[in-house]
Image (cartoon, rainbow, N blue to C red; front, side, top):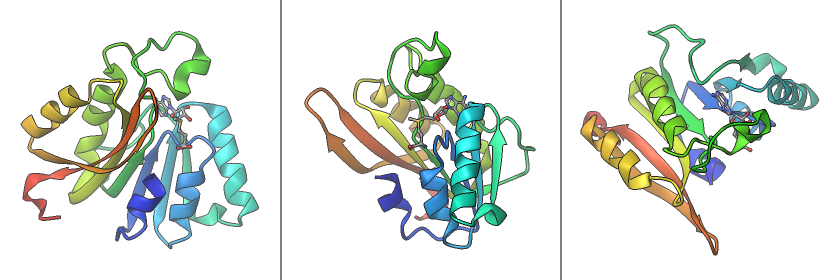
Length: 175
Ligand SMILES: C[S@@+](CC[C@H](N)C(=O)[O-])C[C@H]1O[C@@H](n2cnc3c(N)ncnc32)[C@H](O)[C@@H]1O
């Protein structure tokens, strides 16, 4: 869903939060854009870098082992931010849960938005994956109160949940 959504997006600099194997960043990097791929797990960062090397694309990516976008200075902006973050409403106790557990109160997504939205350029877009099992209405409300538009770019339905890709951007940005 993320790859389909960003296929025609015009961007010079893209940030991925939670790159995992690096597959999303890798596909984006083929388009001659500057890609910054962040993951809190060192293994994921190594895996991403390794996949870039295997595809001879290591020259176009910055792989950052960090927590959300806390490694970046305030005035660094991105045209596109993509994230398929941990989104299930369960607590993040064991480290292995970092790939899917977002805290019972969806606190991870709230932290992500607080940290990442200031890095979006004026016309920037955030593509964010969420699950219907988490508080998506609350998340949408928070974003709308902050002056963002939230569109459902696409979704996949499973028997127990709906996975939704949200497209989030500033109201005034006529996208
Ligand atoms: C659902 S996986 C997505 C992996 C990959 N982007 C994909 O779509 O296949 C979530 C990723 O977020 C990373 N992650 C979890 N907490 C994070 C944080 N605070 N900052 C950065 N990355 C984080 C996990 O290590 C994991 O690799």
